[in-house]
Image (cartoon, rainbow, N blue to C red; front, side, top):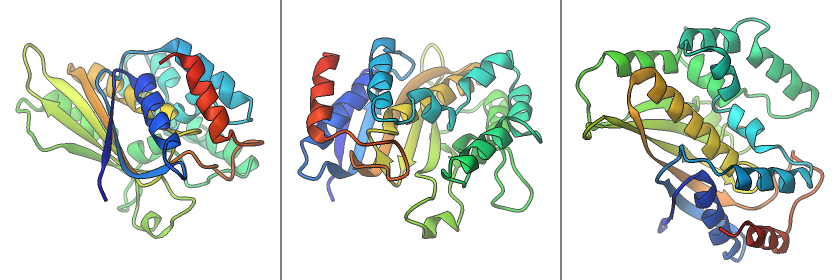
Length: 259
């Protein structure tokens, strides 16, 4: 099945164009949608505020809530540049993850965890592993820049057998480039399923925050970002919200953004 590529300047403009593309499809869905973001660190706070207001009107999750599952940017600021302080605050007994998990259970939401938890306490091979800590160490210590990507895994074998209720993000690839005058770090994220109303823009924001963290810890400069959605849709995320915007309302809303 042929892939469709959307190119955008920042997370917000790329999301707008991808959503417009999906709204042009008869069922509001597509396979193998590739969204390329040239400058993921460039923010459009006006669009973010407008999207949050729109989502709130349907009882849907705010963008930052979605982004936080990938990277807790507020917690990182409180860590004052110390990755170990961040990891400890998130994963310790009674820490951020356990509080988030308790809230999710109380609201009967997904119980598999968060992406950041899988990145920093991977339990797929016996002894828990902190993939991000290992990655930061490699980026700091390694002089050579290899063309093959470094990867952070999210899914575990049991996840692959579930079509619902499993993580939608499969893995993140970190692509390094020995450019001039400074080395750059780009990201590639692969999603098995992607809801572009509730999730995609928040996901892009979280991935951009993750990229910024890796660059800050390693001395690289941010490059581009690309997200591959095996299945992209504007359809309803059945366990979220009090309602769902129709295609007509989504088109009307996009028209107000002026993008």
